[in-house]
Image 1 (cartoon, rainbow, N blue to C red):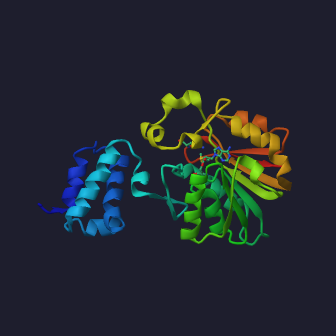
Image 2 (cartoon, rainbow, N blue to C red):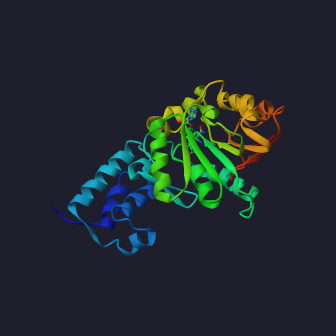
Image 3 (cartoon, rainbow, N blue to C red):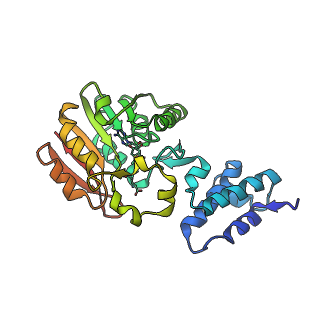
Length: 278
Ligand code: SAM
Ligand code: GLN
């Protein structure tokens, strides 16, 4: 077999993609780095190194999956969120950068020196939100919950790998909680079924539908939270939610009689998160 360097393998992969597409170029870069667990600098320094036959075969398989719209995070089996490597599988949503901004809001609202808090992350997926919070605030008592056992199994692996001391509860929304909490956070499914045609092919083809779509024009989970949250928060407790960029006004209305509502925008200036203080 003819040996191929990392540089040539990169050239080979680039021949299948539009080179002006930064996202695609980055994805190929991630696949190349992953072969030997290198970072960007190591890859640049080793472009003339040859891949073994097995490594090139594996890389070819990965590039083919990527061409078939598989998100690079599923091919790699992991992604970065809030500075940590989280395992992802096709049973879990790939955590998004917008969600890091929700974590950041909670961290900034709660200085390290504050008292311990009891918190829950509902619909935790990979555990991205709850685990990141527990690692930032080690004295918090954090419960991760999801309706999907398969998803929760991935969250368990992530908690172990990242050394987060968290609890787990499988079940429907708030029904898994048996106490009152200081803070509840959730990034629930919020895409309206009518929005299917606006979505990225790779999301639709590979990410779990149960993590994305919600009835009632995407508002189902917010209505449920609005109806039930008072039973699960201590007085002065807070609910933080991620929302769809067109849902700010409607979500604020759902919570107007529940507590004080604050809406925040994401990095792109879109309404993206809500805090309700009861
Ligand atoms: N928190 C993760 C994140 O931000 O990356 C995942 C968010 S994903 C948009 C929504 C999650 O809610 C999925 O993991 C899904 O399994 C879970 N879910 C859907 N319906 C649920 C329900 N009725 N009760 C609890 N979790 C639910
Ligand atoms: N932000 C995700 C997307 O656009 C949706 C996440 C969700 O429904 N909570 O695909």
